[in-house]
Amino acid sequence: MTALTPDLRTTDPGDLDPESVLWEARPELAAIRQTARAAIASPWAVLGCVLARVALSVPPSVVIPPLGNDRSAVASLNVFVGLVGPSGVGKGVATAAAEDVLDIQPGAGRLIEKRPLGSGEGISHMFVDTDSEGENTPAIHSVWFDVPEIDTLTALVGRQASTTSSELRKMFSGEGLGFTNSDATRRKIVPAHSYRAALVAGVQPLKAGPLLDDAAGGTPQRFLWLPATDPGAPDVAPDAPEPLRWASPVLATEHRRTPLTVAPSITAVLRKERLDRLREVITDGLGQQNLVRLKVASLLALLARRLDVTEGDWQLADYIMHVSDRTRGRMQDALRAEAALAVRARAEARAAFDEHQDDAAVHRTADKILAKLSTEPTPASTVRAALGKNLREYIEAAVDSLIRRGLVERLDDEYQGRPRIMLRLRQ
Image (cartoon, rainbow, N blue to C red):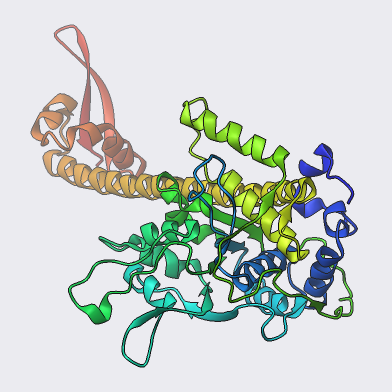
């Protein structure tokens, strides 16, 4: 495999050459790009959906090994993918195209059930079946949580006392799901690492604010954000390639825990980061990012039908994470720009309102002045004193308006050796 260079990793994803190193690194990646472009979809979006399908096709017994010596501290391959783009770019097309990339024969992978996302309490119900005697049993299927529009997820997360965010974070890690409930028919407890799940959401950037705002909870850091657009799409769509025959390298019904083998160089990097965070050397709140990268590297290995995660997988995952970071950054930039426009619009609206209010006050002041004047000169100070306090600041503007309209004239006068201004109605 050709290594990714630092220059490539800092290249804008929208400027990538169609024959880029990433897509040509492996036959399966080239097939993903060709399938995507044949369907007029984003290769990145199709890649994210293919990785999700790979995760769902291997049994939950396949796990990422722990960094320390605690053999129980394994990580799940459950993944969250955000397909980012404006309305109408074909996020659904990308999801459908991903199904054409891999030819998974019956028995070569777990059954995948596509379900809408519901409440936090309802998530555990997706992973529990009921036997003929009414007892709860672990589901034999994996669940693809389909969120066509991010509004659905943000609405669920934003509900008062919502448990959706916390349950999703547990699902990402493969932790136990469910809540104790006095009603046995509603009590669905799912043991840790007994289920496989993926969440794939369509994301319009300007609607992602509530989800990105949950950074303190760590939800957005658990997503792989990939663009649903393809600036380099060819004018003529290529022919679709034949689907790749693929099978899970571990029997789909295997219950014995099967840790992946991670290259020592990768483990060393992750252990150092873990220690730096434990010692508060790193405090950036991005602790989940390397775990997402490791999941991506693991899924690339499984896509190649391997159980060993190599340095090559890690390098490819590094660039994919760079694209994810860029995509999330662009969403944040779009939201900041939208917020700035909203602030400016509010300021302009307020200024217009204030101007309207000032104009109305000037007209009221002018009416008051006309009522106080006659054809005989009257000191301006006398007129000012006759006005209410709330109108006195508008007297100069009101007088100027009356003079321009030819209703009042201003006279210079002197009283007890001091200059003064007199006002009278124009004859």
